[in-house]
Length: 116
Image (cartoon, rainbow, N blue to C red):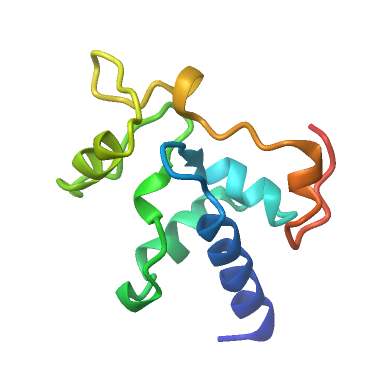
Protein backbone atom coordinates (compact mmCIF):
# COMPACT_ATOMS: atom_id res chain seq x y z
CA UNK A 1 0.00 0.00 0.00
CA UNK A 2 1.45 3.35 -0.92
CA UNK A 3 1.58 6.34 1.40
CA UNK A 4 -1.16 8.22 -0.45
CA UNK A 5 -3.59 5.30 -0.10
CA UNK A 6 -2.82 4.90 3.60
CA UNK A 7 -3.25 8.64 4.16
CA UNK A 8 -6.66 8.54 2.45
CA UNK A 9 -7.67 5.53 4.55
CA UNK A 10 -6.76 7.35 7.76
CA UNK A 11 -8.66 10.46 6.63
CA UNK A 12 -11.77 8.36 5.94
CA UNK A 13 -11.50 6.75 9.38
CA UNK A 14 -11.12 10.20 10.98
CA UNK A 15 -14.32 11.47 9.34
CA UNK A 16 -16.32 8.32 10.14
CA UNK A 17 -15.24 8.47 13.78
CA UNK A 18 -16.71 11.99 13.99
CA UNK A 19 -20.22 11.13 12.70
CA UNK A 20 -22.64 11.96 15.52
CA UNK A 21 -24.93 9.31 16.96
CA UNK A 22 -28.33 9.42 15.25
CA UNK A 23 -26.94 10.92 12.05
CA UNK A 24 -25.69 9.47 8.78
CA UNK A 25 -23.35 10.67 6.06
CA UNK A 26 -22.97 9.61 2.46
CA UNK A 27 -19.91 8.20 0.78
CA UNK A 28 -19.81 11.43 -1.21
CA UNK A 29 -19.78 13.59 1.92
CA UNK A 30 -16.83 11.64 3.27
CA UNK A 31 -14.97 11.98 -0.03
CA UNK A 32 -15.70 15.73 0.04
CA UNK A 33 -14.44 16.10 3.61
CA UNK A 34 -11.18 14.34 2.76
CA UNK A 35 -10.62 16.79 -0.07
CA UNK A 36 -11.20 14.14 -2.74
CA UNK A 37 -14.82 14.60 -3.86
CA UNK A 38 -14.35 12.33 -6.88
CA UNK A 39 -13.46 9.31 -4.71
CA UNK A 40 -16.79 8.31 -3.15
CA UNK A 41 -16.51 4.74 -4.46
CA UNK A 42 -13.07 4.44 -2.92
CA UNK A 43 -14.58 5.48 0.42
CA UNK A 44 -16.87 2.44 0.18
CA UNK A 45 -13.90 0.22 -0.58
CA UNK A 46 -11.98 1.56 2.42
CA UNK A 47 -14.95 1.08 4.75
CA UNK A 48 -15.56 -2.46 3.51
CA UNK A 49 -12.06 -3.38 4.67
CA UNK A 50 -12.22 -1.60 8.03
CA UNK A 51 -10.94 -3.82 10.86
CA UNK A 52 -13.64 -4.46 13.50
CA UNK A 53 -11.23 -3.66 16.31
CA UNK A 54 -11.25 0.00 15.24
CA UNK A 55 -14.90 0.11 16.35
CA UNK A 56 -15.79 2.83 13.84
CA UNK A 57 -19.49 3.65 13.33
CA UNK A 58 -19.45 2.50 9.70
CA UNK A 59 -23.17 1.74 9.99
CA UNK A 60 -23.73 5.52 9.81
CA UNK A 61 -22.57 5.67 6.18
CA UNK A 62 -25.13 5.29 3.37
CA UNK A 63 -25.25 6.03 -0.33
CA UNK A 64 -26.41 9.34 -1.81
CA UNK A 65 -30.07 8.31 -1.83
CA UNK A 66 -30.00 6.97 1.72
CA UNK A 67 -29.79 3.32 0.70
CA UNK A 68 -28.18 0.95 3.18
CA UNK A 69 -25.24 -1.34 2.43
CA UNK A 70 -26.57 -4.35 0.46
CA UNK A 71 -26.27 -7.56 2.46
CA UNK A 72 -25.62 -5.91 5.83
CA UNK A 73 -28.72 -7.07 7.66
CA UNK A 74 -27.86 -5.43 10.99
CA UNK A 75 -27.26 -1.90 9.68
CA UNK A 76 -30.90 -0.81 9.86
CA UNK A 77 -31.33 -2.06 13.44
CA UNK A 78 -28.20 -0.19 14.55
CA UNK A 79 -29.44 3.03 12.97
CA UNK A 80 -32.97 2.65 14.33
CA UNK A 81 -31.56 2.27 17.86
CA UNK A 82 -29.88 5.64 17.37
CA UNK A 83 -33.12 7.28 16.24
CA UNK A 84 -32.38 7.48 12.52
CA UNK A 85 -35.60 7.83 10.52
CA UNK A 86 -36.45 5.71 7.48
CA UNK A 87 -38.67 6.32 4.47
CA UNK A 88 -41.30 3.78 3.38
CA UNK A 89 -38.90 2.41 0.72
CA UNK A 90 -36.40 1.40 3.42
CA UNK A 91 -33.92 4.17 2.69
CA UNK A 92 -32.72 6.55 5.40
CA UNK A 93 -34.65 9.82 5.46
CA UNK A 94 -31.73 12.10 4.60
CA UNK A 95 -33.80 15.23 5.22
CA UNK A 96 -34.06 14.41 8.92
CA UNK A 97 -31.07 12.16 9.58
CA UNK A 98 -28.20 13.38 7.40
CA UNK A 99 -25.36 15.07 9.25
CA UNK A 100 -25.30 18.67 8.12
CA UNK A 101 -21.81 19.62 9.23
CA UNK A 102 -20.99 23.26 9.74
CA UNK A 103 -18.25 25.23 7.98
CA UNK A 104 -16.27 25.26 11.25
CA UNK A 105 -16.53 21.47 11.50
CA UNK A 106 -15.26 21.08 7.95
CA UNK A 107 -12.04 22.84 8.91
CA UNK A 108 -11.33 20.08 11.44
CA UNK A 109 -10.96 17.48 8.69
CA UNK A 110 -7.80 16.68 6.75
CA UNK A 111 -8.77 17.62 3.22
CA UNK A 112 -8.88 21.10 1.73
CA UNK A 113 -12.57 21.10 0.80
CA UNK A 114 -14.09 23.92 -1.11
CA UNK A 115 -17.75 24.71 -1.19
CA UNK A 116 -19.54 22.93 -4.05
